View 1 (tube, rainbow, N blue to C red):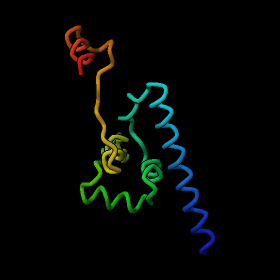
View 2 (view 1 turned 180 degrees about the horizontal axis):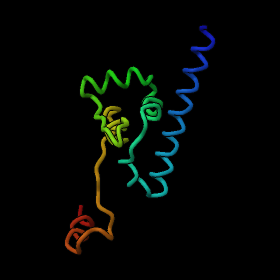
View 3 (view 1 turned 90 degrees about the vertical axis):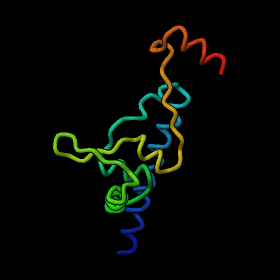
View 4 (view 1 turned 60 degrees about the vertical axis):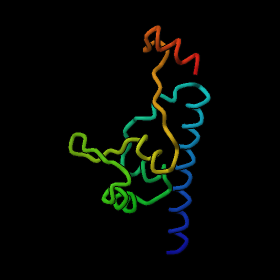
Length: 108
């Protein structure tokens, strides 16, 4: 039984590492704008290296925000990143900015 628990924990951590690698690839490639994608409970739990049950407790304590989409629970990746302490600044893409906003962003 203990071996099975260890294997399950390793599996959850591997999934979390995979999500972190995807995040880093997004940072490098500039496609970080996918931060607000919706995740299933299992994906979200793996992302923060917790069990789905623990994730439910965190949602009940309002530490992580969950949403109901088509009758199923979904969790925004940005909410998980906020829980983990990763600060998210949602910046507009240059093509979405007005000319004035582009000039101001260059000055910053």
